[in-house]
Image 1: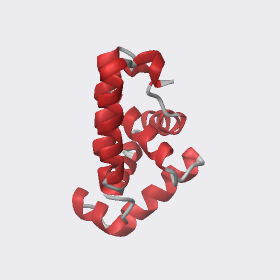
Image 2 (image 1 turned 120 degrees about the vertical axis):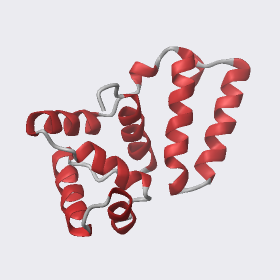
Image 3 (image 1 turned 30 degrees about the vertical axis):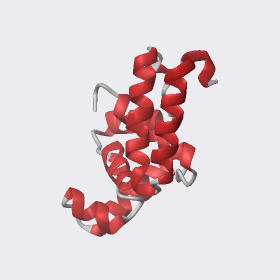
Image 4 (image 1 turned 90 degrees about the vertical axis):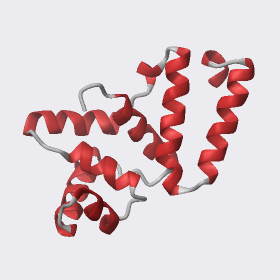
Amino acid sequence: MMNTFISGERQYDFVSKFNYVREAGTCGEQRAAETILQELKKAGVDKMAASPCYEVLRQYDETHNGDLCYIFMQFLKNGRNVNQTSTAIFQHRNTVLNKVKKAVSIMQNECEDYQSRIAFMLSYLNDPNR
């Protein structure tokens, strides 16, 4: 799939950056998402970076004037750690926990796997309305 959009030296550079960031572990996921999005924008296909989970949650936020996309993104940025997330966004731990549970129930996906988390982050970072 990458060959379709990114080829030659740019593909090698992209893959090496992605592998480096992926090896960094959970805390490197946002950096990986940013790197992927940057490369997709260079190739002109950044609009293809869309997560169905993000879209469902974004629509819920629009309808209910909520902040679940923001909370869930912060949760992912903080390695899916509720305590770190609550400290980072200055909200009570239980508030964050309840909002994460609500987001998961709306999306019907916990974003347990790496690809789901990266897809959500890509969609969030690529959303001009966030």
